[in-house]
Length: 218
Image: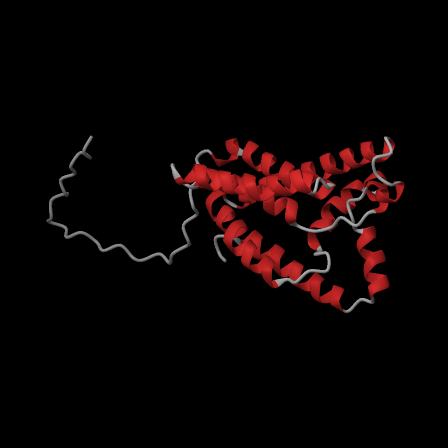
């Protein structure tokens, strides 16, 4: 947890909001989540608020699977990239995938391919950020396993886009592309070493000659 503080703060917040949601009536829960949803209506009136708040609610799901997914993917990415770069990947994936998928939905409504009621659809959750982080971890895996991992990721997120073709399917696949485009953020990334307690240095004997340093092998 010390090397992935952001992951577990986020996960703890999701636990609290999930517990709160289970104490809501179905009618209040639906109305509340729509107010915090990144649908076309809310994005048109409160874009910043809903882009942030929608990432702290799970739509009627269980918290436990997210605890596993966050530990496997988010914590691994934060440990590798550091908190700032990990958060940049997650935020870019969440924001860009939301704007692109809702923009496509708006075009579909404009051309009559989707009902006008879709402007107020329910769209909360953390899956876009998760998909982007899953994708950026491609660069963490050594070759040749990297290519097998990438094919699996593309298949998992690409197949629903082909078969379902919903705006959320588009959002998930967009998140994967955003995560892959975050390759520049992975350059020079090294896992953060846990903080160790300082140990006192052993003083050298006064009469001892300095040690001979050997040049490292080429």
